Image (cartoon, rainbow, N blue to C red):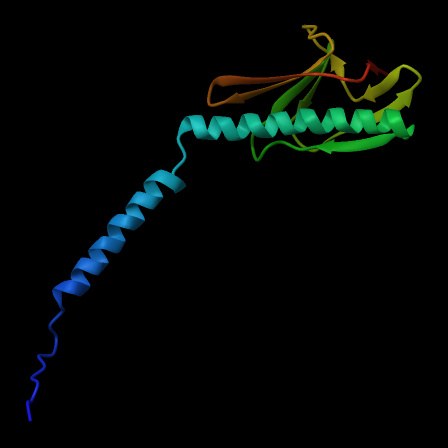
Length: 148
């Protein structure tokens, strides 16, 4: 009979190599997948701004086609404030901001907007200041909008 001798406290080289390999794979995954660059962050913000413009237009179309008034609440994107401009009117979204969409025979009427120094035509333009850079998102409207 062969007797095996075990030495206590000895760590095998295979265990050390396995831990080292897991560490390298984890660092690679973190570096490529979990860390955001500035351009990735800007792209996520622009995507969210475009979603807001798209949602506002969809609610305007829904109010017009169903002949119902709709109230929507706009929120800042985290701590990011933005300005929403339609035609020659603008609204600053600093906190929870409400817009009332009321249908009429030519389109919809929006309330809650103030006069803007620029006229963007029949577009929705959303502007946000991200770390000193101005991000603008523009979307052409498919419904006629007027203001109260």
